Image 1: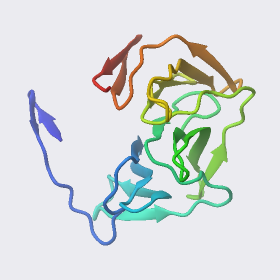
Image 2 (image 1 turned 60 degrees about the horizontal axis):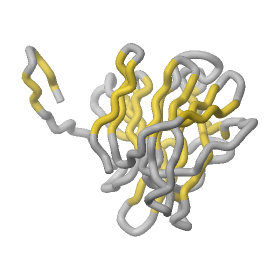
Image 3 (image 1 turned 120 degrees about the horizontal axis):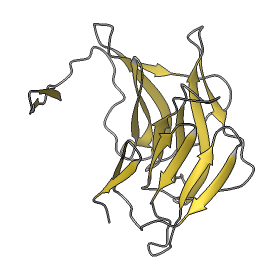
Length: 197
């Protein structure tokens, strides 16, 4: 969307060659200069593929990233957020989602790009374990990743707001309003939540 003087105009971005394809329940992140698509459902199965689009280098073309080493299991309805400070600075961190067995996940993985252009996934070290969930949202406040809302296979299960400190690898829980399939944004020191169930 091109926003100028309070008016927004949607434009279709033309890309050449192959794309990530039709999918839902995936994440779209931005780590300058790349848009990053990870996971989701492609119609008949959940996947764990990763695609990047350098939005500063025409002609625009998607590239499938095939990271070295371990990769996160396939998932749908997970969250992703970019960490911009601390030891995880520059990583896109994914959390949770629903696995191939339709059960909620509670793992965290960081995707990083090395100076050589190589990409890899790092499983987040944890001294404690958060609540598994899907259809939640996450965002970073400094080196803290906040995981907000979500659900398990029991729709009425109460899930706390949980914070993961990337410096100490510890999780902390807080009381939270119950939401899933909602949207979140951080403005200054206020967490905004909109919509959802």
